[in-house]
Amino acid sequence: MKIVICGMSGFVGSALKHHFQGEGNEVIGLSIRSSTSIHDIVAILENSDVVINLAGASILGRWTSSYKDVLRKSRLETTDKLVAALKQCSTPPHTLLNASAIGVYDSYHQHDERSHDYAGDFLASLVLDWERSALRAQSKQTRVCIMRFGVVYAQGGGAMEKMIPPFKLGLGGKMGDGFQMISWIHLEDLVQACAFLIKHEEVEGVVNFTSPEPISNLEQTKSMGGILNRPTFLDLPAWIVKIVFGEGSSVMLDSKEVYPRVLQESGFVFRYPTFDSAMEQIAHEQG
Image 1: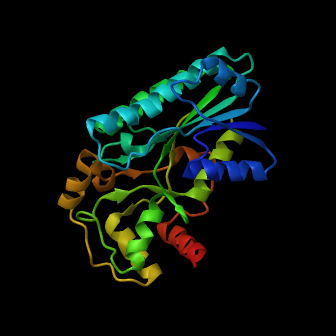
Image 2: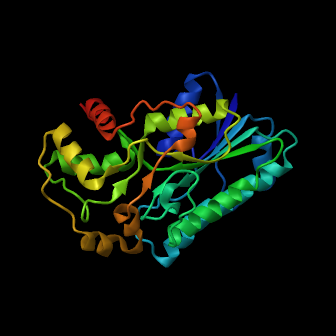
């Protein structure tokens, strides 16, 4: 297959590139900037089989007004251009996998893909606008899957790159009250789920990319301390997180209990369904 990845240089994009190239596919990176013409995008997409859109600035940060603009533009303008180019292709890719986030869901319910209990904050609004933009690419020729990512864990990058060092130094602890639920996915399962969706053409629309067993921040903290054999008594109070990150602290403090109903009902099997299994693999890789 010819697979085009927008956002290939990032943590997830690099893993997808490695996987698909390892299976003998042609993988092409696509960078969409304000100066990139629709014509140039069409030239890359024409006669490709799959396009995976991961473009977007990191949501981990202090959400100032200017950074909110960056978050929106990096997702919406890129996706709008991508969709416009897809509509101009004579032979467009049969599948668009578009990144999204479980931040769309509220903190008060359990969620699967049937849930419409959305949060009322900036992140949920951004996610819904982003998804609406991507879904405009749906046609008889192109199927669209919206990948709502949970927190992505793996050795060497993502959230674990920031989490493990303080734990190894004995500086780990729960964040806030620790009761917030974390819906997460191991990077290997994320990559395999992408490959699964490409093969299963009957699946379309929203797909939660989360493990089947979400975990509370407190349980996660205890698990990491046990596996790394380190104490976990240096808690991080919510008020400090809010001072540092402002509105962006919601990413770390809000509860998200999300389940991957579509993937499981379609027959996908997780390699790392529990946080302990994922953490043990990551710790083993780190040595």
